[in-house]
Image 1 (cartoon, one colour):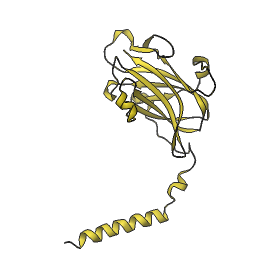
Image 2 (cartoon, one colour):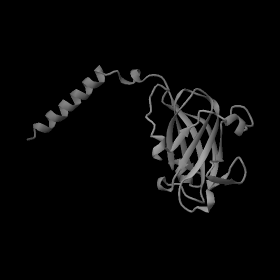
Image 3 (spheres, one colour):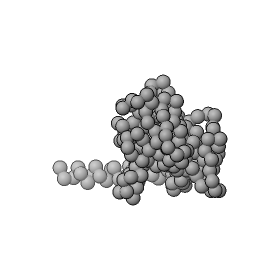
Image 4 (cartoon, one colour):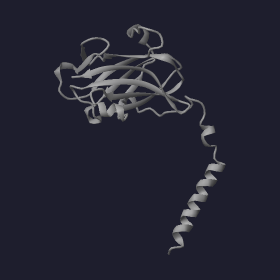
Amino acid sequence: MTLFRPLALGTCACLFTLGLVFSDGPAAAGKPGDAVVEEPDKESGDQRIEIFDNNKAESVCKVKGKGKGKVCLRAAPSMEAEGPEDSPTFKRGGGAKKGDWVLEVYGIFAKPAHAGNAQFIFSDVQDSKASKSREVVGIYQATVKTGGNVSARVRLSTDEGFRAGRMYRAHIAQIIDGKEVLLAEGDFSLK
């Protein structure tokens, strides 16, 4: 019986090594943006993020200073917003106490995005431990076009950890050459 374990481990290690030698490996992964992401069906209601074809980010989001990426958030038609534009508070429409918050996200990037996947990352600003350890409340991935801005609609749910009375930071980032590149960020609150 004791001979089986080393033999199995040796076989696995050998197969793994052969797989590395004969596979295309990381070099075949392609350039940033080559990946194809299968998006959820829009009609299913499972879609958490949707990228708009008509990009209105530049007309909605005014950025002061060059090289600063900014995320501006606006209320979707079913939502209500209050407070300053640079840090709005969103509440569900019609005084509803339950349901998702639906926000429109407009990002003006600090540097142009590559065509491909971008991450929309939401973290709790009030939890100092979370920001230090890079804990996030929600992260959504979507395919973006090459350019300096993006417009999207995102659905935030209590089932995923979003809570009324909390302040959040929205980050838009891409992974380029193995490093996270922050394109834009902005704060908002939920009520």
